[in-house]
Image 1: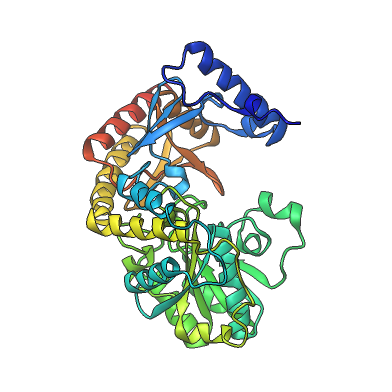
Image 2: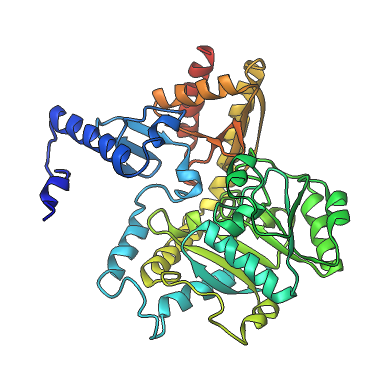
Length: 428
């Protein structure tokens, strides 16, 4: 019989000794190596792989040794509301007195509430939502919806795009290292250069079901398009009868100063995908939102695409609380204001260290610092970790350091990050 007690850390013990901390660190490392993935710690390029996360509050994370990190990574976009926002935690705890997972047979009022709220806060005639558990699942639903609604099976994405790693979403993701081991992928997917509306128009054929784009490419290196790009793609897809899907998994939920990043250009898609921050930093949840016209294709068989845990009460209540915090605490406005301030400070560093930094770009608190080469990029990320600032590289362009802090970040926090970044760059 398995001895469960041997598998328990004494995490509730008050006043952990140095011996306790080292013991937990060693055991964590060993079990990750033996039972999760032995390559995980070897492949991490930034930071000390032996740091064990032990708690978080607002924009800070503490490790087991008591080190305090300023979180400028934000869980790749998850922690827009910081760590353990009290109003979101309260909502989640309250729901646990009633129900966690749906019965699947009785009606789920929390799913209904969240769907109505998303219809209210998203632009245009977006009205209906399919709920899942992650960003890649939300993309899978969007792809299937496009196939089903149009009867066509070709989809165009953009070079350097990242839409997830499940098989359908991976077919739209454009990085060879992720794609090649699993080829052949889903047929009918192609890609064109991002930010070139003329090439996009030429690529669309009578077989094209949809165009899928990130309004701002995240893992591609925080690539912000020209102001006329998304409006031009919208005009082309509308004129040619092709669906437009926006992947707002990373850029949505207020990160760019608007609820959806596409609102910065006044463009409304036919289908939009959300996840990451939608769960308020507490629960996994994805959402695929579309129009009444498109949703009609589901009427013959509403169970043609389903999800056991999608839209469960606990996740929905948490997401409702997150959206309420977003608006009531004016976090979108803060993201826009602090984003400009952060960009200004980072661009000053780029001017000071032109031999190291190639470009600083972004919108709101979705910012990328592109280093001139891989080596300084690795050293900069590692140096920031050593100075207790969390950042990471973007997956499709490892020379770019992402800066995506919680949306409540303050000017004094940014000043401190810029100061520490300056110190790191001095030593490279």
